[in-house]
Length: 230
Image (spheres, helix red, strand yellow):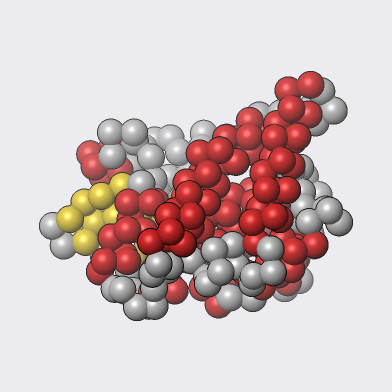
């Protein structure tokens, strides 16, 4: 099993966490990436398999698939235990909706903020921050008294954790208005599978002089000062 991935790819990070939670054996194939050219030149296998020319891409024997949600579903069928979707149909549907909204409703605002760093006081950035804040408030209500977003730990938690990690870096931060989400994020950060994936991301950010969210400070390579650049 080979997973094509980049060092700051949120969607590929989701897949890695899921694979670690499932105890699957896989090889990471790191595609070309740097902060200036991003994912250029494209990896030829990624271009061959994914018409969108994006990671993550998974090759397992003669199966070749892309898109983090599709890979999630494959993992769940390949290794049903530990389950990462709820068993009850309505609960599973709600968890899938959170995963989808994390990718398709919340994360586009974070992508918008990536191009507006240094302009966070201007109208386009303010609008994106307000939209992200509304999603934070929705998730604060959703989690309620539960430890995780859908009751039991699921792909929904993996998806929103990774999206919010990028949100935190771009200025869409959790605040005192989100105590349940802050506690949830701390709970997520303690999971070994999450730390296995977030640790290399933190190391990469430090290596290129970029900031890291304070809640991941304990993953920073020893002896390194925390950078302050966005």
